[in-house]
Image (cartoon, rainbow, N blue to C red; front, side):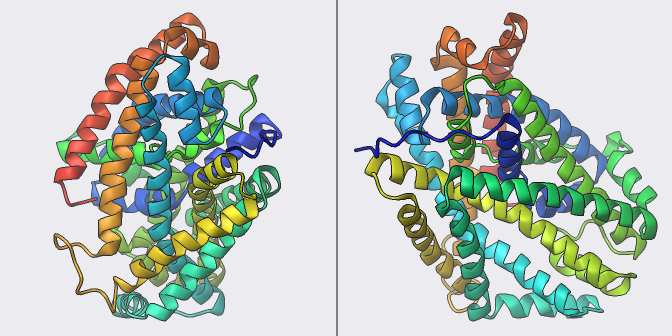
Length: 451
């Protein structure tokens, strides 16, 4: 059954863009992109990443918004409606469920990682200084070994997330994004300027943008391709859900361009800010996932104004994680409210509790339950493997196949409203280039244990 309530729409085109940027901009941009750039040799990774955003991320982003707006419902309902309209099997509804359930599983461990950010922000504000690499490693190890601290911060972050979703599409999600996203960009620009004044911005710029052909390997190409796909929150039902609230007169192509551009800029600016400070203190850019939790606390401890800059940096990462987490909860909450007629606040808090429980298990997988492993992976790694390496690429592949091959040309053109030549270019890129890239990423990430 359905609640029968009129469906909300974003208050403006720019509200939709900011909200969707908030979904796309997350830990992947400010944590994952810099450390992957450092680990994959810098400029070669960045160049391929930019190319893949254009050829893989942008076409698929447009396809997800298209299906969401065409279906005007949560990802499950939208897929069923659009499939029926195009004479396709109702089994395509499984695609919607794959995205919704994948988003919930991601949120279960994403909120745990975001809790680490809240802990480090608290330490930065309190003026805690980590002066040696050994101290940084011990601090992080101590956090991982303390289940109560992990569960506490996981609970705090998840409560913040659910509190926004419970307030609704306009009063909650849109209002929060309109506040946090401008603040995020302001903090990021400040950190870049600060890096230019007290860091080694020249070295950071050369590292990221001086292309060195000898660094371009197959692994770099596939890693950059994979990150371009995951950076835009694709394959999780999130963009489809947000697209369902977009009014019929707003341009999907123009909105998608601005979303992809802003998402890319955040990653590039975060890289410049982080690497300029890292290089200025003689530290390694290739320190991997520990770049934020091991390397940067050392930088902040030894630099002028480090307490303020460190606090702002972790606030920046918190805003990015928060807006992304909100979007991960929305697809399932929308399904519960629309399909079962449950009040949004009840649906949101119920969803939060359902996610909190496996999140607690993830916290314990680092300490009390660390001995329990499957194929050598703890629960955190298992969920990451299942979602990022299987569910997300398969869901993205299904979206590309549906929008490129199953959905009729007339219906797709009626919704996306591009000039004939541009529409044909988008459709052909989606049909061949995007699909091939997703298959390559899927096979590579399935076989390769590295990020």
